[in-house]
Length: 268
Image (cartoon, rainbow, N blue to C red):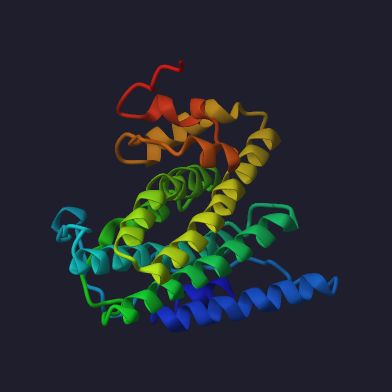
C-alpha cells in the first residue's frame, strides 16, 4: 500500500490513494483486524508529476510575500512540502518494515500521511482559488535529500524528518498565517491553521518513536539526536524557534539550541 502511493505521480491521485489506504488501515484496526506489515522495496525517489520543474534551492526564484504573486509562490511552496511529506510518511513504513516496531508506529505514520494528504489538497484548493495550480511554478529539488541520506537509518530518519524539518514548520507557519491574515485571505489562513495544529502531532510522533528506539538500545536520546543531526542534516538549525510548540511535541530546547547557528537568548 505504501509503495503504491510512492509510485503514483500525480499529486491529487497520490493523495486520493493515500486517503484510501489510510481508511482501509484504520477500518481494519477498528474491527480488531491487523493488516500484515511485511516488507517492501520502495523506490529510491517517489514518482512525481511532470510539473513543477524541480530546481536547486539557490535557483528557485524568490518573491516578496506582500504581493499576490508572492503569496501564490508561498502557497505553492507549502503544497510542494506537503506532497513530499505524504511520501516521507509512507516511505518510513515501506523502507523500515524489517525493523520490529509496535503496531502504534504504523498507526501514527499512516495517520500522519493521511493528514499530509489533506494538507496538500488544502493548499491546491487555495492555489486554484488564486487562479493558479500546483506545478505552475518551479519548486525545491532538495526536499527528498533527507530521505535519501537516511535510507538505511531509522533513528536518523526520525531525527531529521519529523524532529528537524517538520519542527521547522512549527517555527515558520505562524508568520505565514500572519501574511495571509493581513491580505484578508481567510481561506488560506484557515487552511494553514489546520496544518499548524496537525503538524505538532507529526513532530510528536517523531519524538515518541525516536525516544522509544533510544530506550530499546539504551542510548541517550539527546546525545544521539545531536550526533545524527550533525551527520545527516546539512547546516545549522536556524532560530527563532517556536519553543512552546516544540515542547508540546516533546522536543526540549537542549535538543535543538546546541545545533543552532547562534546562542540561545538569556532567560530573564
